Length: 230
Length: 339
Image (cartoon, rainbow over the protein chains, first blue to last red):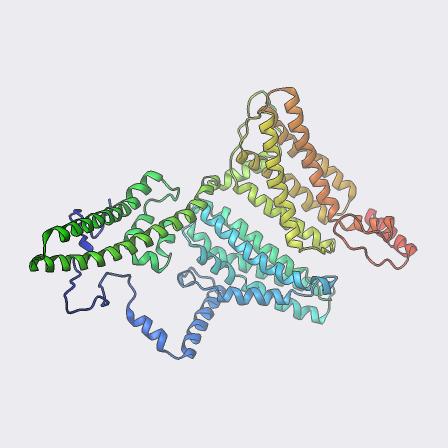
């Protein structure tokens, strides 16, 4: 049974407040030394007083580091420890923008196309996260969202390549090239996210977590592959 | 999961260590009410006690002040105690409020997820076995068949069906006016799974069948496996006769299994007939609808047959330059397909 620091005599003496000594000289608005969490006050001072450029550069560097981690998926915990959602947002928006205007009736489907991609990515990521938590995962909600979002990067690169290839022409050769590129990036995405997420699962249930991730990236890859600009 | 959630729930949890301890209790996150009361309730009880005692002390103080006269020492002593009591009361009050709020918030959040946790407790082998079993009709209908109340397999199958539908809609160049492709696909599949399950559960309740809601969801979900296979094959190979064969064989097998399981859990001929007839009709008709709503060849034929009329499905009539041209095109397509 956990012994709380302050259970004291249990006689209603407020032992936690026994340290508080109020003398008549000190006004009541002074500081009460109640032990707070592990923040050192130095951190707060430094981020408030530093120039804006430093703050932005620090965040950009963090985002860039995570991109590098996705490019070379090793089992590092940096991606998991300091999660952020800037990278996924940028990737999602750029992918959605590039996928616009790709259907038969572009003046009607311009709007829903963007919303579709957005909703698919975020809704899919939320569902996968909930699924992995329900299966007994040890990773938290936003960490999982962060990993899944960052692992969309290979597919964004594939989308760029596809658009460039489509500029050259839309024949069978270009389709084969696009198929190979999208397939490779899809495999990369799935492997990268599996490397981060599957470790947090009990060992015999990895397949159960990998399948939704596979489906998620498959749907995104399919949207990229069937994109034909008008 | 509880440890991670508690450890990363942010500053408010970190400030008040007593609460954090309680969230890390135990490996399973199914909330055990007795444990909750024991470990997390005690701090609140203590707070409550402190609160209570402070109130009592106040009353005592008030009585003491009124009755004890104006002795200096007493006045000073009471003054200090009064001041400290006031301060202490405020702090304790705050802690009590914050703690109560945190507890109710965290409890509602964790309880919502954990309600579903037992239904996701499966192994991959079990899922595979159940997928294969869903295509095999049982023979023993006099003995109630066991249905696994599991939601992982059905949920994954519904999402797979959504993905396959998306693929079908894309290749058939379906134009959706009101809403998005994704919205339609998700709405159709989830609507079918949840809606028909609820409807069948209601019928089962009327017909006195021994089945719970989760079991019904599970049964119908696994029945969608046949739909997935059929649609996956026929969206890529557009032969009408192939579709009908698949519809009868694959769709029929999965329907037979569901029907057999339901029959084994119902008594009475009329009830069995009602339940099974409804389920069979809905299941088979859904497969038919999915095929015909989003299919390329049918679209072309409809356009020529009905002319400028808009087809009943969510499609826009295409500009057909001339009837003879369109007929020529469709005939050529049909010939090419049969070849």
